[in-house]
Image 1 (cartoon, helix red, strand yellow):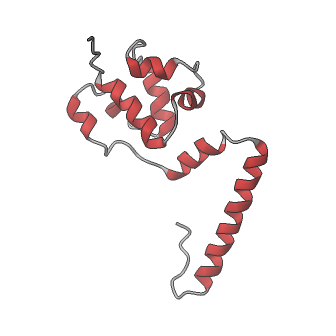
Image 2 (cartoon, rainbow, N blue to C red):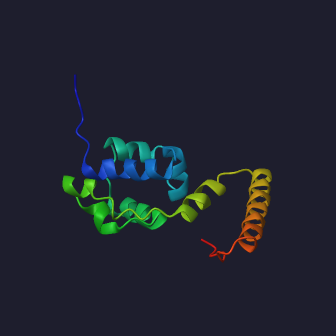
Image 3 (cartoon, rainbow, N blue to C red):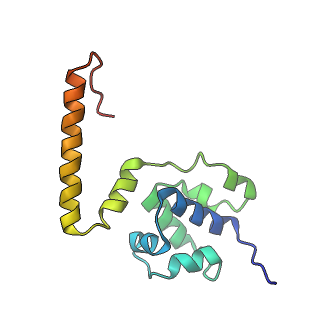
Length: 129
């Protein structure tokens, strides 16, 4: 049986994708690369060139130096992964069909109105966060 040892960068790319809860084709679409590119990056059949690492760093707000670091120790350090819920919402939102986008906007508007109403009924001022 032949096993492939994945490089740290390959594992980091997959880790980022899993944190954001997206598939390989979704990540490829986000980065405007062909559908199979992410699969090939994660499997090692396509080297993780600087261009791809820069795209991933910019798109997902990941520290570029952390992403480039080939040490296994860096894989354990998640402090360089800045998880941004708004960014995740944006990624998911752009994948929706137009009619579903309208529903999401409507639901979010209703939730904001409820939050503001709840804030007025409590002694704690609404912080917006």
